[in-house]
Each structure stands twice: as structure tokens, then as C-alpha cells.
Length: 401
Image 1 (cartoon, rainbow, N blue to C red):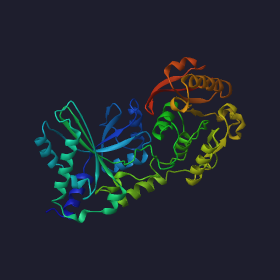
Image 2 (image 1 turned 90 degrees about the vertical axis):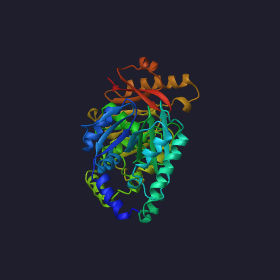
Image 3 (image 1 turned 30 degrees about the horizontal axis):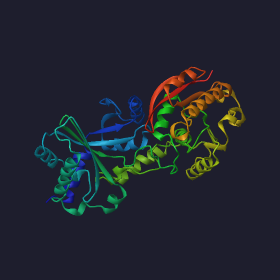
Image 4 (image 1 turned 90 degrees about the horizontal axis):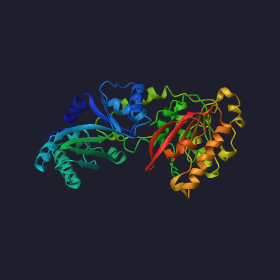
């Protein structure tokens, strides 16, 4: 019977003391931006492998923690814990029996298991899941239960991702927990809100720079404004939330506190607004103001109730000088938020006219419900494919002449 002390030694040797393999998922086509983010955090990208919708990198376990805390464009970060081939269930059971589950999961942890299989002889996801659960249970049966930490089991639910392609299995444990777009700032939702991870990608594609003014004139729930405020104040993407890795046997609270202390030292609170949010919906504005106040961002974001078509940037005293032009972000109503496609397209055209008339010199990031509308834009823009809310959209970026 293995003791808790023996398992702790093995965790130090095989998890904490070795280089691991991690997978970062992001929006398809935006993998290169995620690589640049890894570099900015100080994580080596020497052995990065890109694939559609993600990338693999190697590093120590604390770099996985760093990536969760700092990456703005990542959806989820997985740690690889095993790869093997199996063409029948007897082989699968034998391979699973060799995985040291006790190094990654506390005894008694209930795991959600996500199984996908393509071009493999073992394709029944339920049967594969049953073998995994049996393997974990059998492994725990040989270990002393001093390892059990019921509080961590309850607070930090775990999930495994098992992928079989051409009879090759990859077993990963989720280090993030909730999807990383959930920053922990707001709880209110909208009809078609932009995710925070998507907002960060849009900022990068639009060439947004820290300290530039940002206008969010159809703010809705305030995703652009809040993400912009976190960037402007150097607040890490995951500063306000917890992660699944906090319930891992290898997690050391003292090490995590050190990582957060280093991040906190780089946070700089602004003394005057650089982000200007507005919406014609008073309820949206009040909800956003509450979030801003609760998270000490009042000095960074200014909110007012105003229809976009009545908004003039020169009316905002901080933007009175031409040199103070920055980025304007718009996610206009479309799809389920409007009754007809014709009305959606008509509004899009009116938005472009308004931009051309009143926002000369401003950079713009405008989401279009279709590429066919690009020809309706009265100024030069670059196009970027964007998958959002189950829809294939087009992001338009450029500077208004």
C-alpha cells in the first residue's frame, strides 16, 4: 500500500520537478496571437506546436499557473498526462492502469470526463469513459487515504479530456476550470455579448495600445470596457478568479501567493478615465457602473447613458484634443438581437456613416454580420474572420480618414 509520503515524493519528482506538456485552446486562426502572449509572460515558445484552434507548449508546472493567470486570448489550458495507442478495450485498460492518477487527482475527486474519438476502432465514448473511471478507482484503492482533501475536492471540480484520433489516445487534465473568458468581474449577461477572450483578440488585431483612449459606444454588458480597463491597469486576466489547478495534489499555496505578489507589483491604477462606455439602455449602464465600482475601476472607465447616434467624441473633455484619438469598438445588433436581416444591415450602414462623419482619425474595430457588407464601409478596412456566438462574423479594423 502506497503511503501519502511516498506519493508526495513522486509528485515532487514527476510533476513539480519535470518539464510538462500543455495545450492552450484559442479561437481558430488566432493561434499566432496566443504565441505572442506566451512570450510576453516569459514562457519559452521554442518548442511550440500550432494546430487549428490551439497550440502545445512545454514548461514547468508553475508556467501553467502563469499562463492561466495572464493569458487573455486563451479559452482553456490543459496539462497532458498520457499518450498511448489502443485498438481494443483490453489494450485500453492496460494502458490506463499505467497512468499515475494519484499524482493529478485527490482521492475521492469526482471528474467530468470528456471523450472524443475520430477514425479510431474504439469509438464508443461512454464505454471509454467507464474504463477511465474504473482505472482511477482501482488506482486509488491501493493508496492510503491520508491524501484526501475534501475541501479542495468541493471547491475545485476537475475534468479530464480524452481524445482518440487514429487509435492514438491523448489524456489531459483541465487546469483552468471555468472557461478563461470568465474573468470573475461580472455576472450579468446580454443577448449576444462578446466574450472577454474575443475582446482581447479584437484589441490586438485593431492595434490597441495601453494608455490610448477607448470608446465603447454600444457597451451592453461592458465587455470591451472592462477588458480594456484590465489591460490599461496591467491587471492579469485571471486576477479575480480561481482555477482548477488549485485543487491539484501538486498545488502549493505559497508558490501561488508568490506568483500573485509578482503580478500585483505590476498593477498600476490610473488616475483619470481613458475608457468611455455608453449605451442607450440605462439598465445596462447602471449594471456596468456597479461592476466598475465593485472592482475599483471608477478612475479608469467613465459611463454615460447615450445613444451612439447622438454621441460626439469632442463632447468628452478628455478627448477634446485631436491627439487624444484612440480606438472605437462596436459590436452592433445582429441575428437574434434584431427582428430582420434587412434592419440589421441598414443599421450597420448607418453606423458606418456616423463613424465617417464624427470619428475622423480614430481607429475602429467593427463587427460585421457578413463579409458582403464590407463594400458598404465608406473607408478602407482590413477583414478578419471571427467565430462568435455560433456565427461566422467578420471583424473590420482600420483608421477612419
